[in-house]
Length: 258
Image (cartoon, rainbow, N blue to C red; front, side, top):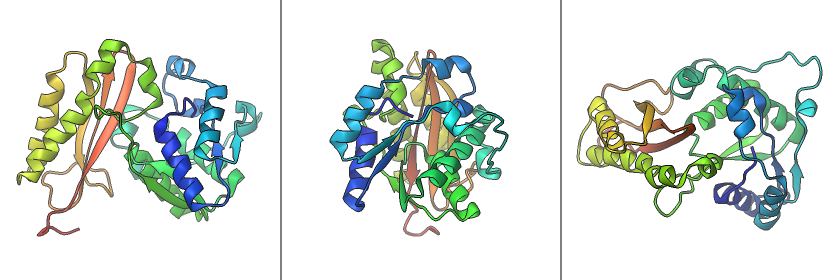
């Protein structure tokens, strides 16, 4: 959605390494914002975005106006059901309908062999994988690792809206995830204890206002009672008006089912 940063550059570089031609789509999608003020405040810098795309190896950049994606009379919505209900879906009703609709449109227009998504938006990635499988869209989804700042904060276009004080506080998301990961690595299997470890770390940062913390099944996103295989730690936290998300996958133990 523009305001491109090193995380986006990493996706473009990977695409350029894997493919003969790379197309970047940039579209600030009004249908996935729950608050119009958030849509209006979303950072936009088309000339800077084009420089990032060129430097990272993009061959083409598609920046359509809203009326090209949603022409007059547009009335179609693409919805993925169960996977969009928890976590971000519960916190932002209707958000994923906007995401899945615009992604279906862009994938149809691009007709690409592969599309590259970052793992920071773990639920979005899972939803889009389901969308492509269900609709028979012949585009391979390639998941790429989350790119982080040196202090651990996941790169996001929203980071530029943080005040200096909020930016200094924001790495608490990563610390909270790693606190739970450390408990898991030490043998803890109680999912509520892992969630409590995240809440406790976040509570120590006065500027952090958590919306949710989660320890869920990575395939269904339903909350777990015990971690007996793979799991996904995730959270959404507000710093003033800026909302940030992050996640940490938990690997299965050697004696656990994958």
